[in-house]
Length: 182
Image (cartoon, rainbow, N blue to C red; front, top):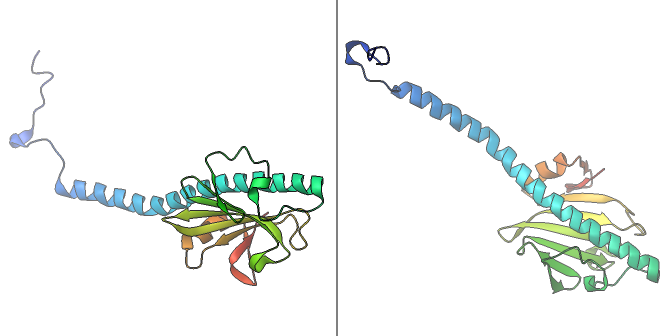
């Protein structure tokens, strides 16, 4: 009875994998990792941008409430808005908030800087202190682009372009880094 459960190997051969079998497995794992890693990076950045987009939406809605109450959008002072649902953020001054340990910056712009006469809220996703992708939501009564949303990829960042495209963005012909979102 004890011989039924014993493994026998012809010519004393030891059980195990050959070097070729191990190399094939390592090659297959390497190919799968090479294909999956870029998609994983896009998914992570898209997740960060989705969080940023919800923050921008909250700020834009608060700015719209301010507009309804006062007839104008607030000046570059984000603290005038009721945005209590954005926890863990600190004011940077000039209408900016820093959130998620400095990895996301929100900016309320009411017609200053290079975007004169355009009221919008912008969220910037940073990685290693550098802006990777921006999300702009123009307010409903903005003189230009009223109610429109845009994704802006950083120049030279293929990852940011993939993220903007994955959101359904269509590239603007006049700006190679901007995508209009549906």
